[in-house]
Amino acid sequence: MNITYDTIRGSRIVTAKDQGALILRTGTVYDGIGREASHDLDLLLDGGKIVQVAPRGSFDGKGLPVWDCSDKFVMPGLIEAHLHMSGMHTQEPYRRYFENNDVRLIRALGHAEELLAHGYTTVRELGAKGRGIGIREGIGKGLCRGPRILTSIEFLSPTGGHGDWPILPYDFVKETSMRSVLVDGPDQCVYAVRRLLREGADLVKIVTATGNMGQPYDNMKFRACFNLKEIRAMSDEAHEQGKKIAAHVVGDVGLRNALDGGIDTIEHCLFNFEKNPELLEKMLEKKVTLVPTLSIIKWFGEYEEKNGNQAAADRFYHNVEKHGEFVKAAWEAGVPIACGTDENGMHGTGRCPEEYVSLAKAGLPNYAILQGANSVAAKTLDLQDKTGSLEAGKSADILVLNKNPLEDISILRSKENIAYVVQGV
Ligand SMILES: [Zn+2]
Image (cartoon, rainbow, N blue to C red; front, side, top):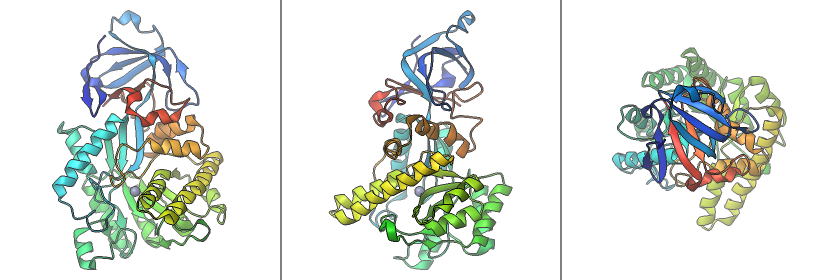
């Protein structure tokens, strides 16, 4: 059969529910869960969902059209667990927040399309004045194209914390929430969580420490944001409402507070592992998921290098390496790793697959990286019943590739290796 598709940013996007019932015939197929590929399975798709998965030929008696992908590599659509659809395109401290909002929205729409074209069928957008909720609703109404979006809408920071912008007058920053919502004390924290969930946030995002990720690794100093009572108040409220809470975590103090405060997903997690090895035990004990975002640290390094600050760039690159060693140790110890980059527009878009290459460089096997982009990420987003694996009942979020990422993970970086991106429901 000839499948129908739209071409978005050079990639073929198939809307599964518009195709009617069909058999997707595979040759090499990865289910998003295991360690190895399977072979010669047929996927029965209908209504934008995977109805059944069975050995080739199992559905032949049904008289359904066969979409033959037996010469391709078939896997679940990718999930990006940490990004910002900010529409920002510069690091400059003033220009990044003061551009016309409509222009930023248009750029963010392009970002959404770019993600879909790169095989991302689900992303988690973590605020910082991101356009996640507008685009999420726009996609739902058929006004624009992009992946399924989960968003925190904003992130929460205390006064003087990571989300404050002290180069500008406090009243202005507080009033406009230009970077984050500033809240202090458990009552304000709980109120802000309730407000955001009322506005339709899918999860809550906070910060537990602040500081430059390009500090010398041996002498890193990060300052805590929020005290334990505040963190606990926000976690309890999020959990009370059935939502997860993510935290921007840097430094041992930020990690310790996040773990004691009931945070579910630890974002970044750059700290001196050599000086604080016991924190890995604590991560296991608290059953948190790690989203290491090696990419953003590397991109900061590239930014410094481009601006001629080689010493600063080298510190970032060194920290990527040390962070990679920790991530490998965490993975070996059994901490779930979900792939996320912190892509935010300021370092370009379409770069999310670079995280896979960085994780491979850190020593994770390709299957673990694919799990981190599929089933582990789905669980991190509380979407394990909907996406992240090729199983009966799941959404038909499927990536059809010309090459095998289990053999070479870097092939995911190039859209040329993507034959089709299938979007389910
Ligand atoms: Zn982020």
